[in-house]
Amino acid sequence: MIPPRMIAPSSADATSGRREYTWVLLLIFLAILFRSTVFVFWERAHFDADQAITGLMAKHLAELRAFPVFWYGQSYMLAVESWITAPVFAVAGVSVPTLKLPLLVINFAVAWLLLRTVVREVGLRPSVAAIPTLFFALPAAGTAARLVEANGGNVEPFLYVLLIWILRDRPAWCGFVVGLGFLQREFTLYGFAALLAVEALQGTLFTRTGIRKRLATFRTAAEVWLVVFWLKEYSSGAGPGTTLGAVYQPHDNVTELLSRVCVDPQTAFGGFWRIATEHWPVLFGIQERPISDFGVVTNVTQGVWWSGIVLAAIAVIPLAGIGRTAWRQRSASVPPTAFCGYLVATAVFSIAGYVIGKCGVINFYYTRYELLSVLGIAGLSAWFLRAQPSGWLRRAWLGLAVVWFVLTAVPHVRLLVEYVKHPPQDIRRFIIANLDAGGHRLAVSDYWIAYPITFLTNERIIVSSSDFMRVQEYERLVAEQRAGVVRISREPCERGRQILPRVWLCEP
Image (cartoon, rainbow, N blue to C red; front, side, top):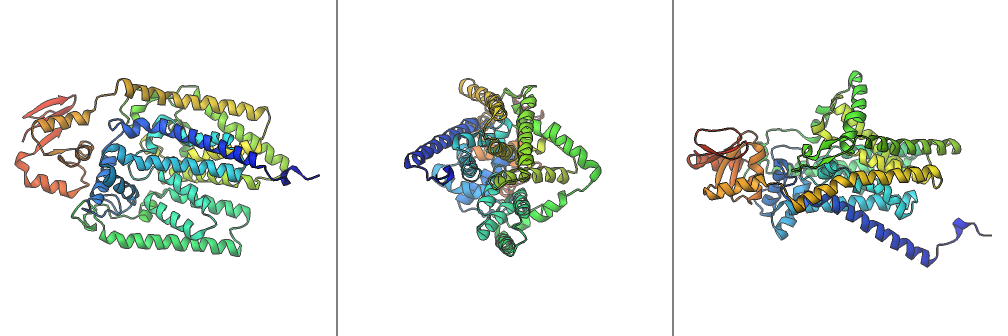
């Protein structure tokens, strides 16, 4: 008798499997579109000065007015987002939605790669693999906003981490991803460190073949760094007509990373405790908090007090199930869980890097420094579902997962309903209307007002920053016509009129 595993699947089974995979992938994409729609297609919802800088860089690049290699004003954080957005601007025009569309595509790519790898390497059927993927596809509303935020590199590390694993046996391409990813966002290194850890545990890292592969990876990464740092010499450091000499923070990614390292055992324990009690509640949306705290213009809140119990069970049950399976098999890991272990290790390195980099200080405003825990819970879930193919524990966990995704979806629904029925006032467009009414084409304001207005008017109105300069050209234009420049102020002024609560237009 032929063992079941030796029987080739029939063409009908293969067709059914492909159909299931297609439908699951479509549903995952719809989930991403659902949780991103407000942030991408309503410009007033989540758009600030940092994102405006990314957009202005892309506009200048599309118009061939500047050559930004790194973010304006600094010599680290590779301008990948601006480079992938410039062609979109050239074809579809300059706007907040066209700025964020490439990031939405990256979100789709991350979800696709995650689902594909869980199906192929972990061995879960697509409908089951959808559960781990949904932790990325349908996160808390505040985290979802971060994943389409054009501020230099929030979602890209997710893509780089997955590509590092997929390309691990192609060292040159893997090295290209490591080099490019590190130059854009140092967090990419967590994925590469996790790959080395998994290979070391598998016993393949320190073999002749393993050493040769990783040396080739390092070599290609170094070549990428050398090319980029050569290009940096021709970079527009602070907008059109500037050079690298205009950069006021002459760091690179390595020195920036080393400057954040703080190895202090006394603060480490407290830092890890705050990860669990302060960071994860924000990241996963457990904490009852207004979504406006994430820079989103809305009255909607996220989180309920008992949701932390659900998330804790979702994490603890897999740990217990995996531990029980490992004890029975007397093995800490089996081949199908290598990818899951990689994702969990990436999250562990990300958490450790955040704690060490911030010397144990965990701050709400730096949540974006540790987003990769989302991949950790996805990997842990896939590992459990593989280790626990049936039984009441699996059914209980799947029930809790459904409850969790309902909890995360509700704020998204409320946010979408709010913007469809009663969208909040667009304050920046109101300011622009007042500037247009007065015939003002040059103005001065603080950083958080100046650059969004300049971007939203497609540089028809130039507002220079009075406190934090990124584009030197604006400073020059305002200086040349100082006599006719209006000031947008958050405080009352002598020759001014209030146009909004805490906003005044001050005549020259």
